Length: 440
Image (cartoon, rainbow, N blue to C red; front, side, top):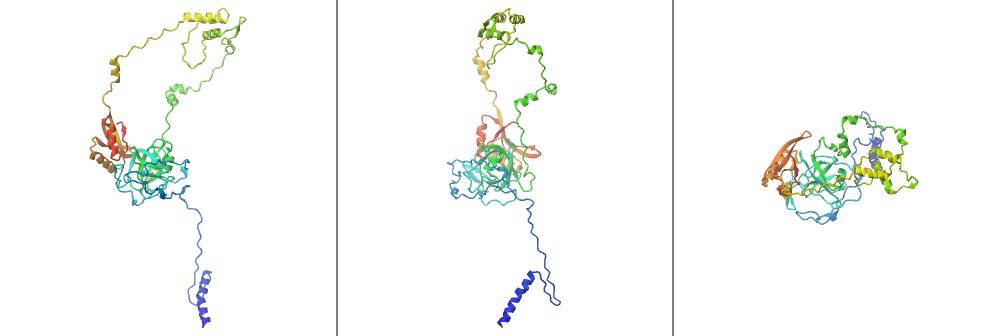
C-alpha cells in the first residue's frame, strides 16, 4: 500500500515535467497540449532615455532642522556660501513640467519680517519681471517650505506667492540665458527680488559672480510649447568703432581700401631731414640741433601739448641747406616773423546772480512707477485692489501686446519725484518687489 501511495504521489510531478519540456500527453479522444513559443526579451535601450544628473541627489541634513524663528529667517546670523567648484550645468537635466498635487505645506498665506504674503490659487498665465538672487551651501540639505530637500545642484527656485510646486522658465534679461526650474520653496524676502534660484540655476543663467540678475519669470504648465524656448540673446552693445563706421558716408565706405602710393626715387634719396653732426669742421651742439628741427617743423613726440606749427620761409630753409645760413640764423628769422601768441585773457568772474540762475532747479520732476506686469488679468486686478486698499492713489492697469501676448502693467503715477521713494517703500511693504521708474 505504501508503494502504491508513493506512485500516486509522483504521478502529478511526472505530468508537470512532461508539460515543461514541451512533450504532448496522448489520450484517447482527449485534447492536445499546445506549447506557446518562448517570448523574446527586448534588450535595446528606450527611445527617450531620461537624462540623469551627474550629481547625487541631496539628502536631508538633520543638523539643519529647526533654527527657524516664526515670522523670521533661518539662521539669520550665518552667512550663506557657495562651493569653490562650478558645476557642469549642461549635464544637469531641467525638471519635467508635470501636474502635481499641491504640497501639504507652504501653500497658506504667511507673514515674514512683518510682511503678509498671499499665496496665489494658480500659476496660470503668471508673468513677472524683477530681480533674482540665489542660495547655496547654507540651505543645502535642508527641507524647503514644500517639504522637499533643497539641492543646490538641481534646478529649483523659491518664490513668495506661486503655488508649491510650480514650474517656470526664468530668463536672464541681460544675456538671454534661461532655465526651467521647479518652485518648491518660499522666498526671497528682499524688497527688490522676486525669485531665489538654486546655485546651479544661477550658474546656468550666468550671474554666479554678480550675485543678482534682472530676470523674467514665466509660469509653465504641461503641454506648453514654451518649455524649451529661450529668449534670444541680446546683441552685444556697439563699440565706439562700430558707431564711427556707421556714420561714414556711403561713398567713402564703397571706395574700398586705399593703396599706398609708390615713393619717388628722388624723395627716397632726399637728405634734407638727415642732420649732420659734423658741419664746417666742428661738432654741432644740442641748441643747433633743436634749431635745425624747428626749421623743418620736426618735433619729438613727448605726449605733452606743443605750440602751433610755424610756417617757415622756404628760401631760408634752402639757404640753410646750402650752408649760406646757419641753423641759429634760421631760428632767429623764424621767431622774428612769427612771434609768440599773446596770452589769453583771464576768464571774467561769474556773478552771484548768474550762479544762482544756473543752479536753480526746474519745475518739480514727475515720474511713473511700475509695480509689476501680469499676463493674467485676474492677478492684475487682485494686485490693483491691494494697492487701492492701502490708499495708494494713482494706481492703474495698462494693457499692452508684447511678442504677440497681452500683458497688464500695474503702474502708479505720474507722481512727484520727491515723494517717489516713500511711495515705493509703501509698495514694498505690501509684498511687491521694488517698483521701477518708467517713461510713458
